[in-house]
Image 1: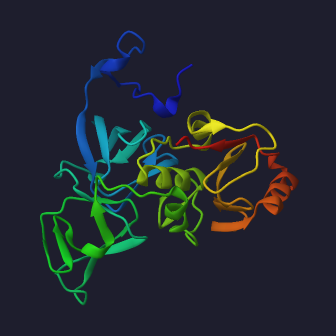
Image 2: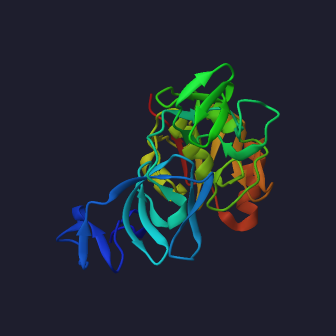
Length: 276
């Protein structure tokens, strides 16, 4: 059975790649669009529950606009869902990304000017030009120190994940305003150019190689439980977004394994290592 989260089809429309497999009144190619707001909830149904989130400048394939809701598939991980029509734009393709923990968009190239928006790590922008310490974008002026070219990759996903320390836990969250365990893993992987799905069960299937029981852990490994995933920031330390702390936090590995099992969420289901 196909995974609903990754299947670009609803009762009215389906992507052309599904012709012959999925019955729908229309099969469409879709149209390229960008997220035009700082953070947008990607819903599992119009007005439904948040499934994931997307940030400014991320790209989607727009399959349908219906009664104020855009049915889209995210470019970053093929996740399917619904955004409000006003959250989707035809803006210029991004050239840069927020590489710092977060930044502000200012109304003028002046730190004392009113800010227009708060953008978190990973948000994307089209830089029109740079003058002094500011980059001019269609949204306003952003400090150059907080940006990096879109093609520039981080070298260590654990360093990227550590930027999020203290960020509040938010189920389905994908930004500095709130993030969950799989969102933290995805943010760190994507910043390093590592393809990564959106949810922990998909990550357990597709990321890295599974290590034999008893393999000594090392920095950069991933530990999986049923419904949870965590980075190892050191051989004996977890770095993860979790409900126990209601934040991105670090804690001793042995203590975390015991706590998670004691609270009823079971043992570690996989110890994985990213290839390369």
